[in-house]
Image (cartoon, rainbow, N blue to C red):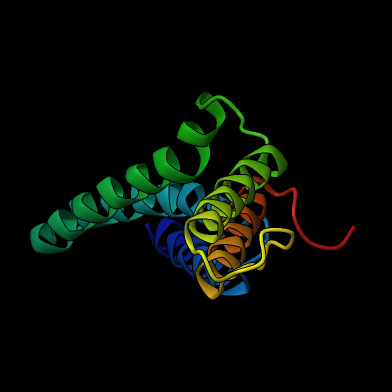
Length: 142
């Protein structure tokens, strides 16, 4: 039983290191924690620590949720093209600015200035795409 306790504790720490490192392997912390939870469930039941056992049931549920959210669901979803999404977001924003420009009578119609709102939308879309690329392990330096 001492080996299960030691192994579960080490896996719990490994999962914490994976999350703290924010590496592309971060999602696998939930798999590591799931194995750790199984060990802690055995340990808690073996020593009749029923409140500890109940806590580990809760942690097992959160580990399963993490595995679903970070590993299984992204693989089931249709992959999107971040560049295409960014292109459409920027294009829509520029269209909105152009309509506003045309409706303003005192602005030259030969230029199309970009508003702060449009630039902010472009920036936010880039952040969103960057986070998606990090989650999918396709972002960052090669």
